[in-house]
Image (cartoon, rainbow, N blue to C red):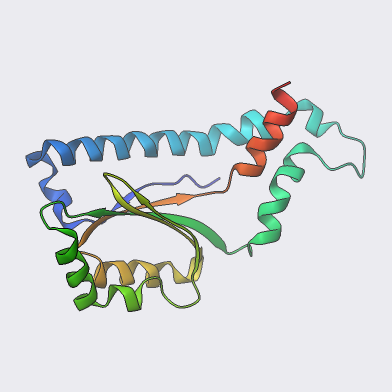
Length: 177
């Protein structure tokens, strides 16, 4: 089973020790990655291998199969979710950031054509949080779009993610009673 790792791609990350705020962000990101990696390993063991799920009658869908069905139906096997934190450069006002992004072609280039935007939110105090559905073969293309057009206006962080909503709803329905 693969374990996810965060990839910090900000040019300013090498100066993390100089900035207490950046150090805090890096520490929070590291703790998130540790939690995420542990949940990738523990959650399937804790919830996917229940005795009731393995002793179901033939032809009866198991809890694990029912929970993964919506995700399997909505995404081809070679895609994954990628959440990107686009952190604003707080040393610049928003109009200057947008001017720089326009000059670098960010709005024309990101996301690359054919990459599905699952969500795109503004997170106050952070910047923007974008979740994409990416075919594995196009990961480099997404990375290059960020590297060539977003840096300078944003510092970036990438997190492989997965859709847990159906699983959580199923667990709340069965275990929350």
